[in-house]
Amino acid sequence: MSLETIYDVDNIFAKIIRGEMACVKIEETNDTLAFMDVFPQSRGHCLVVHKNADATNLFDIKTESLGALVNMVQRIAKGVKDGLNPDGIRIAQFNGAPAGQTVFHLHFHIIPVYENRALAPHAGGSPADAALLEETAAKIRAAL
Ligand code: 5GP
Image 1 (tube, rainbow, N blue to C red):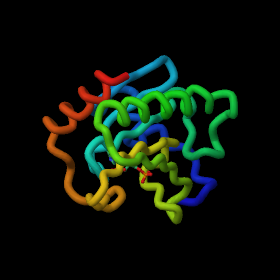
Image 2: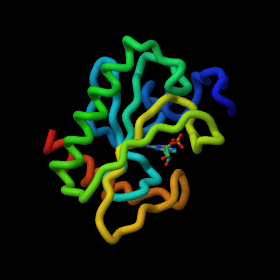
Image 3: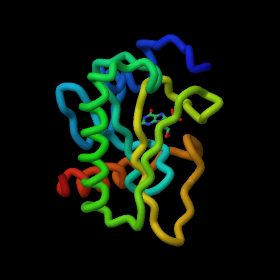
């Protein structure tokens, strides 16, 4: 999966956007969707995607579509900051498998960091408890 990977309309995030796969949603706009990562690196790890761009990575999306996506990243990161009180927040975005990308639909990670708590590995481990994800999403939502 190089930087030239063709967009696959059946990738996991496309299915989530179409409602064919479940997710724990935080917020949705006409253009964007924010939802919890099911293999979180920390409590509150969430993802923001564009719903209409069909972009594999950052190089695929039209510049004029990027604004809505980045605005949503900032909005949800503020919700994470105010709702969960982490000590830091990492924003990440991977392009191509060699860089760590595992789902080939452009997305931004919002990863809260808590002092003295190591992050879990990226895109690994077992899925988070569904009730805990719902509870965490509710805290973020309430802070928006
Ligand atoms: P990437 O490696 O492409 O930057 O990030 C993909 C992210 O999607 C990973 O953090 C991984 O935990 C998450 N992920 C993988 N499968 C699913 C899924 O089915 N649902 C949700 N909500 N997240 C997923």
